[in-house]
Image (tube, rainbow, N blue to C red; front, side, top):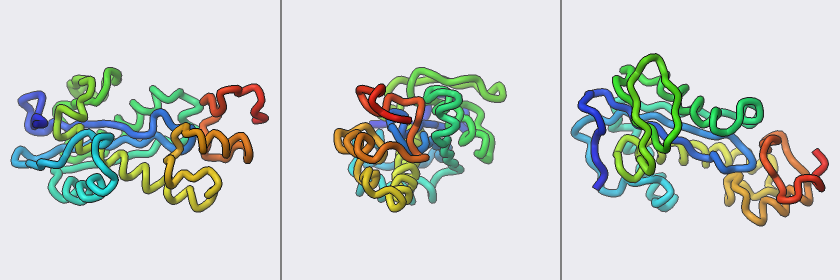
Length: 199
């Protein structure tokens, strides 16, 4: 059973990101503050949920949350500051959009940077331990998937609607065959033998 909160603060927000390991598209983060009365038996780490369950949970989270926000950090910024910094930045930008302002932040994973003197705690596998992080993981994943679906229309040969930009065999074959797009992360090792790829 997922726990409600880590701290004793009323406005504790959970934050998580999606798409960190992808070769194309943004890294997307979300931040959520849930009310104390929030309960949901399905909610869990988004990676453990089917697409159908994530889609079912998204409007529930959005309707019942005290507040939520999500942010895309796009490939050009990822290439500039690296994926770890881009992931943290996406989480921080989402948190800054929350109203009311969180009094405490719980972060999925083990890396974060201080933000406006708000106390925080990083929690490994936090998305399978705390409701607000699980809720943030669902929103980050569903908003990122929707974005990948949209850019799939532009470049259907990479099949982003299925692989969402992750380094599947099919995605790498398409990069080998068609080269890269404006949505690919140039700082990533797009092919195992990068030297053969003309950038």
